[in-house]
Image (cartoon, rainbow, N blue to C red; front, side, top):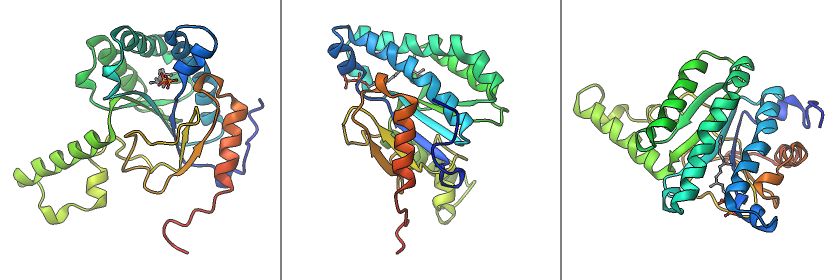
Length: 241
Ligand code: FPP
């Protein structure tokens, strides 16, 4: 896959969000344990991150672990958590060199210490980088994020820092984990499932949804290019005619 733009630069989405679904089914289809599917999922992810940078996409947001994923078998939770730390340990130098700025979305206080610390260090180290904004949703839930924003605004009102009249979309968006990022232009979900699953509920208000049949470990640069092409062909009206 060349680094050549698959669509004109002017049509590139600013913010792409991906639900990396189907790792378990992919592993099962290959007669392997689910954990292997997640591991191959990280392998599939690496070139996609590079391409987002190369193609001038401003922000990439990945759904790594939801607030509901804790209900999975304990060993699968541990394997997913292990992969997160392994990813940062292995990739942080390269990401930093490429100018990637890492942000975690979600309730980091609720993840184990080693994941929290690794993620904090990655954010701290890359916070001034001006390249791709790579957001990793970990212990993330869209409703939880919205409720949290409401609580934070209520606290500011209670302390006199602001009044209810000050609460508009701008103030509200400032309390989301995605504060300062553009809204999602393109949401991609793999594996044929066509749901949002509590991901970026507020930010996807006018997102274009592209659902691809491939399971996440089979999400190649060519599949990504095809998803961008589908996006570029959409007629985005934002409620207008
Ligand atoms: C969905 O597949 C995938 C997940 C719940 C986890 C996705 C996480 C990764 C690929 C690793 C994240 C790591 C980094 C560094 C961002 P599934 O298990 O629900 O698949 P299934 O529906 O076939 O069972």
